[in-house]
Image (cartoon, rainbow, N blue to C red):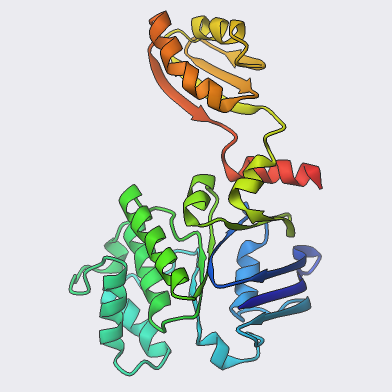
Length: 302
């Protein structure tokens, strides 16, 4: 469905994408990249909005920059929060449907809004919508042409947990229907729910590809970092050291940051230990489960 071969994109002396090659099949694929990694630039090239400076890419067997028909078979949800704020949701999505020359744009818009759990009869202007609702309006606008390739740049940002689950389920349904769904995200937990196929871009280059679990396991040869907030962090730290569960720590009165080689064992032990010591736990949060830490690790390994 998507073929990228040795693609680079330059903006003057700035290299946004460098020598990226990959193949993306039908189903859900996650594209991961920190700010400035080049993922939005890659998305723009896949949608035909900007040409590659070097290399070739094909979407549905054609060059999206040169083939207008193939651009009509792609749906894009941009990261930018740019809507016509004076329009209602159905009016905005109707404009999107009309731009694809749909036979009945208003009816198409109403159906697309229903798919993302929004009421097409709501007269409220999108300028008054919450961030999560605006995200769903953008997804509805991308669905009006029933795209075979759907490209979504950070579509889950601003959604509450229920909306996020529903949107993720929608992406999986579209992928199961044989569409290619390419989703960017910066949260590893989201990636685990989105799908197992992952492309990681760091500093404009393809840093890793493969299954989400395989990528996370690349980090298992280094300590995991966890922040613990408790009523008596010092007492808790003393026992964690004595029990051999941590290899390094820093602490103040209530906050404890530990490095552990066995995060699962630490997770199983921390609550019973706190009960045993009479210490109240307020937070146990991983500090290296975010995507930035994975990028740093992958880039260091290159």
